[in-house]
Length: 140
Image 1 (spheres, rainbow, N blue to C red):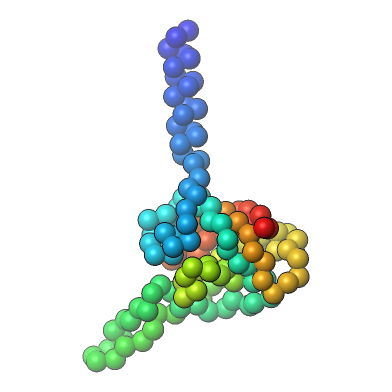
Image 2 (cartoon, rainbow, N blue to C red; image 1 turned 90 degrees about the horizontal axis):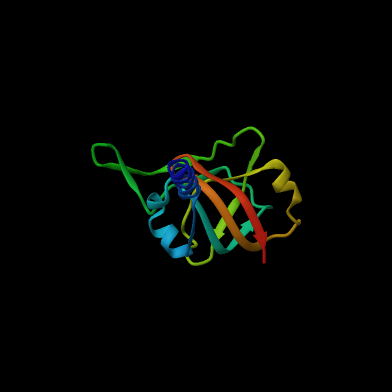
């Protein structure tokens, strides 16, 4: 009986550790978002702009790619919206130059109030190269 109890408790501990959420500051995330790859992140004080259409974003800090001998070009990525989701502009007040693709489910997007800017707490998961899926948005 003791072995079964220890086994069950270890499974519960592993499951809770696997689904852990990280509460972080805006600066910590925007300065090194690759450190949070694939983890659920909670950030407070983020502005959503549902009226702003997002088509193309500049990925990362001012990045330069060598295209040919002596020529350079800015890295630009298009936000490819997943079926059933909408692309939404997320503004981090501490880092206004940070750019990444954020996606929100259609139903969640339609439930947002029609305003220019909505401030709140954002819970999301993903990575910068493919985009971040917003799981929860709590208005403040």
